[in-house]
Length: 362
Ligand SMILES: NC(=O)c1ccc[n+]([C@@H]2O[C@H](COP(=O)([O-])OP(=O)(O)OC[C@H]3O[C@@H](n4cnc5c(N)ncnc54)[C@H](OP(=O)(O)O)[C@@H]3O)[C@@H](O)[C@H]2O)c1
Image: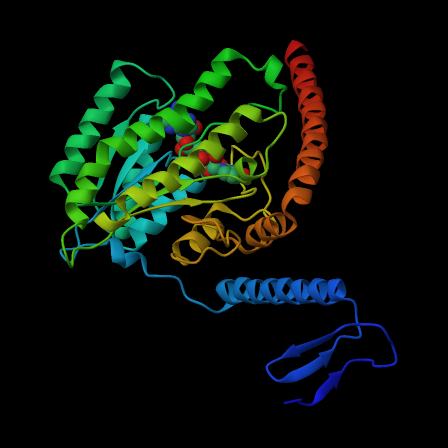
């Protein structure tokens, strides 16, 4: 039986006819053009939907509530490393405001005491401080880890924020990086983070693996320097990339046991580490950054397509999204742009150091 014939631009002759589902389809366009335009349409649809999702997640969809990590008895603890300034201090404040007791970890007793007093008097929560220089392996650090492990066993630890981080004093070529600086960055960003997590995760699994029990959270603070390889910060960049891979492996291991593990990505934030003092759309204050983190659990935002990762702050999310969108091209371009930006920062930092040296001599 001959069915109806469908022509597309039938003024062109010589193209094949296909018999599909009882229709004769005369294809007046090259088959390659049809395939390419179909692929194009699929990609366009995919990216339109993902931009739509990004905007929805940033502007409309609410994140899961942080209370999912709290026990009903109201005595859940959150542990925050590097909590005496910047992002860590804000985590400590905002978690205390949400009624978590807070374990404070830092290396300066006076600063820890100040934070402790502020949290206890302002939010009426309990605090517990551990003084430790996390960059220095040895008996003091081991002792602190053992004490924290013990504390986690006998208290309801629901949240671990692996915030503490170290970077280079200024951008520097890998070949010229001081060994002490490299050690400090690797010990702080990697070894300490893994050792601390190892110390408390059995208690979190025990707490969260029973049916109906609250979830536990292990959040590590990443950096877009780990996402886009950053020349002249190679050691820092590499440690943050390592954290990302470790997070994903661990997250999969423990998700069935009620422990959620995630990496939160950040671009620049006002802080001592970034040496940026003034906030802008691209550089949030620690308070605004942490607010975006605590209000968007479960939403990847800029980290779409990357499991166990999210980029909560809106401008960072757009930046991260664009990097993912352009793939290879953005990585190659990103490395070059960052290289020249860091060369420039290094020049200015060296000039500043020279000026300060001159000023001290006078
Ligand atoms: N700021 C940014 O632009 C940015 C961007 C991406 C990612 N991040 C990440 O965000 C995290 C927090 O950075 P931040 O900008 O908030 O830094 P920050 O303001 O310099 O604060 C770092 C905190 O860690 C503590 N700390 C540093 N070294 C320590 C050590 N060896 N032992 C114990 N405590 C130590 C500091 O204590 P002291 O007060 O004693 O120094 C301080 O409380 C880091 O993981 C960083 O990589 C930051």
